[in-house]
Figure 1 (spheres, rainbow, N blue to C red):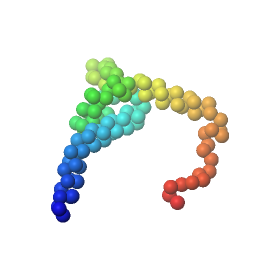
Figure 2: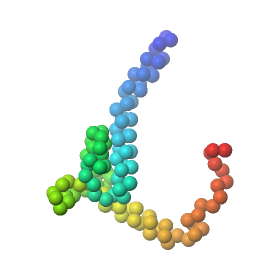
Figure 3: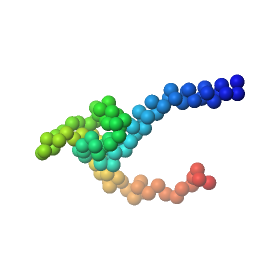
Figure 4: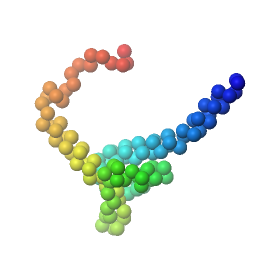
Length: 112
């Protein structure tokens, strides 16, 4: 019984590991797309790891991506929807009043 609990935890974590890797690959892909602001990039820049490249192929449509070719004929992945949404966010923030842009003093913090 003493070794059954750690062994059971190890088996459960081992079964959960592939899902965790897929989620982390999707997160790193989304982070790369947002860092490039949706602009076209080759797969090597967006997804340098094999797991991230697989996430790109599985989630391209869900992220609003599109496959484009550059002048040299290289395949690039662009995300025009994300680029439009980020541009719209900047427009709305620029139109917001100073009171809406400044959140004010922090009254409560989880650091305290």
